[in-house]
Amino acid sequence: MLTLRQSPFDLFERLEQQMATAERVPNAEIRETDTSYTVRLELPGVDHDSIEVKATDRNLVITAERTANSSDDTNALLLSEFRSGTRSRSFRFPHSLDRDQLKASYRDGILEINAVKAVEHTSISVHIDS
Image (cartoon, rainbow, N blue to C red):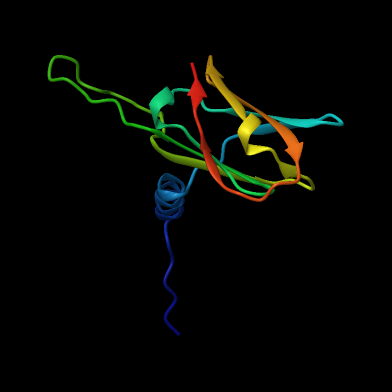
């Protein structure tokens, strides 16, 4: 019987490759009142213009992209643990959202979305204030 053994280093390399290609899911916090929801997401290092917030009847979908830093020839990069790529998160609420009253702001790496509860059923995109 022929037994093939993998090096533990090969396993770590494969795990690192899988983590590098995996979609990033930002940490979130949701608060509910009688009339609204407040959603906060951690999006450090993300450019304001790359954030997209979409709302449907009871769903909220947030996507953002963190671009890789371009390196210049004068300073060689020795190590970078910063992860670039797309981050995405979606939420489904028990009550419909009033998409006309959605407000979003982005400051200090935190995206905050205020959504008022409603009964209507349409889809819109939300403008993000800086």
